[in-house]
Length: 413
Image (cartoon, rainbow, N blue to C red; front, side, top):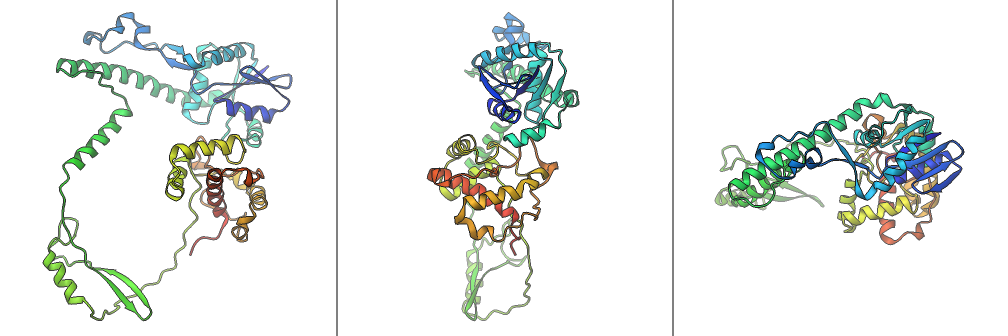
């Protein structure tokens, strides 16, 4: 029996759809007579706290540092322990396992650590799915690889997690104990990521707190050329009273220059006209989409995330919505004609936009080498009834569609 272990339930469902003949069970799908698809819910295991290694570590004592936390010990995460038990049982029944974590180092780790934890001896294959839809999963099923090819990726993520634990526990205790000796109450939490970010925030706060107002003056002019006007700004001479940012700091000097130029003719010394081409912007990653929706529709980041979740899960209208990538695969370029055709049928209000679409125009966005665990957020080849969407869902969907369609339009000149 072949057992697929997906990173999350949604991916498990996609794989099951790709395999076909799906029967839903508690914590897994049966697909035909020989395939089972189960899933993690993110990490199912966590590194055990210090007191599991040594009960004496429950008390924070300077003499215990550095804590001896090797070999690493894992324990089930309480909220997902039932799913872990299901995965364990299925591993025991498997003649072959297919690792279906996300195609990044953390995705590699969270399935591999479960297999190692339960002492799996069955052969393991690896499936790489960048896009959360059944068509992408079907294609990926034809390209299964040996999981040993990804051992280095597993070790990379494992080293990071073990290092974070050692650094976090030891430095937090060391700093907290040192703080207590100086009368500081509470825990001084230290972490590889959180501490540098906190440092950036504090430095910014201190810079703002110590900021001193600086006055400077700008000389600008509105110049008439027949029926047209041009806006100009003075580039001050090197011997002018300037600060270290080349800004005029003498009001009398600025006034003198302005008075000397007011209502006087201006000569055009040189005029340059350059033809520039601007490519279409890259398709959205989640953060870019959240910023865009906030600026254009006053929809906050949390709501934008929820709206994309509905568009993906309820309507199957967009690809994976939590992506941090702004690039697409060459395979998705090959799928573009079908996607564009369905979009043009579903969105007659955008007919003017589709008149200049050329599905053979390959944007810089299609670059396999820049695709990470997931591709950019784009519309799927699903014809939806846009009238069924709420106003906010429609706004987010159309933003994603327009950004995608723009990839196939002529460059802006």
